[in-house]
Image 1 (cartoon, rainbow, N blue to C red):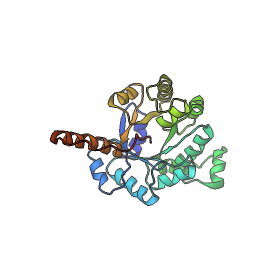
Image 2 (spheres, helix red, strand yellow):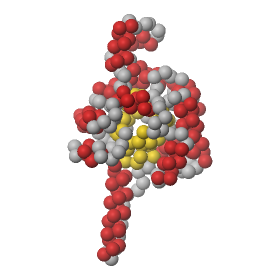
Image 3 (tube, rainbow, N blue to C red):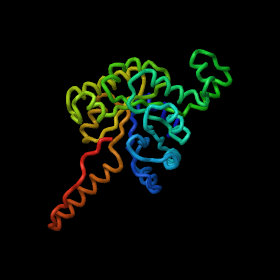
Image 4 (spheres, rainbow, N blue to C red):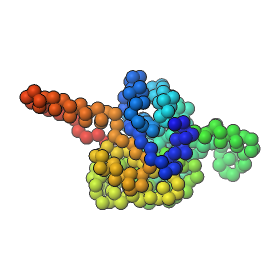
Length: 270
């Protein structure tokens, strides 16, 4: 789908399925393109990806009909505009807690190329010439804005965050949210599930997309969708690679009587 279609789908009743792409290999898009995804998630907050690499990833996946959802390093509107310039169909701003943060990001996403004093006057209420307003709208029609909800203060201010016109979707960061709730990585804890359901319900009631990046079991992910999410980021390429490699090598070793190798490394929380 195109970036414009993705923006429309975020707010619809359609469910959208993606995965986190860690690999920056040029071979990877060909593989990912055959996996039945609706979009890809590229995370520059926790994964070291430089701007040039990010841009070719965004443009390659977009050309394959997989809109790239890019999480920036922090909720800086200038970094959001850089990501859009690099080819992001949607920007995810991490750890949002205030309406002011959302408003600044909406301005960056939906009022390009306005900047500086001109932008400030428009934000203060000055009207745009209708012809130029149409130009701005057309120029940003493919820019989707998604904010991470990852803390108790964000949930407490959720209604105010949702009031900001121009927001397209919310994405739960389950690890940080569980930590903020005081139930770190307890994704079956009633308090965590209650918070998730509240976020999904309030966003969808406003016609705003609601999703989560989750790496749990199939049953856990189905439960999250049934709770109201319409956007699911399923695990990550590196997690799926590790899981299947471990399982298949263990099975092969067992069949020929070899002892399983010690498995190193812990769980991933991205």
